[in-house]
Image 1 (spheres, one colour):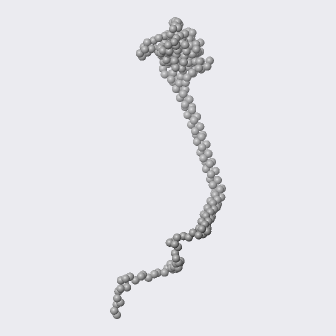
Image 2 (tube, helix red, strand yellow):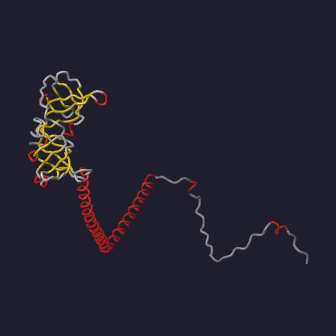
Length: 283
């Protein structure tokens, strides 16, 4: 049987119920009714009205289909098959050795037939959250009443974990963090070793190729210098061929004689006007 053929009763709660003939809204699913002796969903209770105070019961035979968004029912087809049916969620689970092991928290049913495939039970208190849910086959049920369900002790000891609780998830998280920490340490060591190896290789390459790189840089510089000088010569040659002469203001009429000045020669001060106009002193 495929997973799509099964559905948990909790998934049906509060689902919309519509009438097949009129397509009118009937209400919402409130409770599923189970014939525990036959391991069969016999029908369900639909809540309607203000705050869901009005209740209407439908047998499984009145159910047309179970969709993703609603349950479709036929209100005209009605038969009384609900005498032995009751709500199964919340029943206490006892073993035939007199031990109370938990309560029914949910169950899986066949969409087409309503047959119950698995009961899901949890221990008392918050164990549903901490320890998860365990599966129980309907064949393990010995008897049931309005308050309790009795199963075999062997079935209780062999119950398999169906959904994990916080304890299992916490343990898994701790194991993951532990393994992830170890892996992170290993990756960090590998990264450091890789960085050291890369640095060593870079240093070795620099030492081996630095003289060659220096020669290449010097050669490239000389090539650039030669190219610039060549371009300057070309420009001068073009000016000469075109007969272009610079403006007169940039060319002196006669070349000035160069002034040869001894670096250590001292010039005498020029006489001032006062000294030139001063009469000679009388003897």
